[in-house]
Image (cartoon, rainbow, N blue to C red; front, side, top):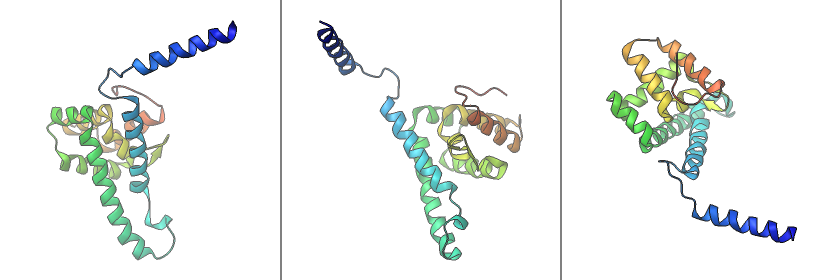
Amino acid sequence: MEVVGWIVLAIIVVALLSAWRPTGKHSAAASFSKSKELRRLSRELATSPFDQGGDIVTNLLQGAKKKDQALSGLLDLCQSDPNVSQVMQKHGVQRADLEHLYQQLIAGGAGQWVAGHFVAASSLVFGQTLDYALGNLRTGKASLVEVAARLSDYFERGEVGPISD
C-alpha cells in the first residue's frame, strides 16, 4: 500500500508541475538564462590582457575587440529586460548612457568581482541596482565612488530588492 501511495503522490506532483505556468514577467528558465549570459559576459569584460600570457600587444588588440563585443552583449541583455527597460525610461536614458554609466562605474571602483558578480556589469542588468546608480548619480545624492561602494556592498551582502542608502 505504501508503494501505491508514493506512486499516486508522484502522479499528482507531475500533473501539478505540468499544469504550472509562471505568472510573473520572467520564468525561472529566463532568469537562469539571463544569469548564465551575465556570467559569460562578465568574465569577458573582467579579463585583463596581462592574465592571458603570450604577446601583450596581441592580447591588447584581441582583448579590446572581445571586450567591445561583450559590452555590446551586456547592453543587449539590459535592453531585453522589461524591468531594466522600465528604469531606463524612468530616467530617460538610452543605450549610450548605459555604456557611459558602465565606464563610470569601472572608474569609480566597481570593476571588481564581489560574491560572484562583476559589479559594474551586474549593476546595469538588474532594475534595482540600475535605478539606484542612475538616481544617485544624476541627482548628485552620492559620488561615483560612494555609488560604486554601495553597489559592491549590495552584491556582497546578497541583498535583493530596492537599495537603501
